[in-house]
Image (cartoon, rainbow, N blue to C red; front, side, top):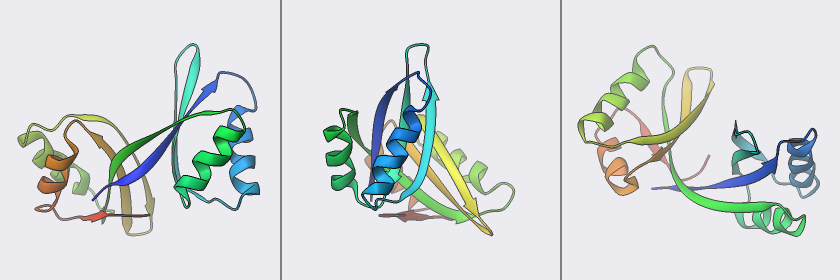
Length: 136
């Protein structure tokens, strides 16, 4: 199971992230998770949102470059060592993690993973102490 992630390419300019947040808020689209990465020329805002198709539409209408990517989201116990044991199994299976980001709520943690082999990753995660999610 995978979920869709939006990647929004932004100029390195003050206020650009806020423009995205305003557009999504104005259209009643909730940001469940996000991560920001930057290079010298631009930034990449990666988002998991409540309404993927609508978000793509409204952001493109506002002239943002948006790309959709399949990612894996897992939920596991928010305890020391939980992530390490999951990553051990992925490493043993030869799965490279291109990037990941996480957020925790109380005793649960959610982790978004962009693996080199998404199908194999989902298969391996089936044997881990986690739940592969189809939405956040």
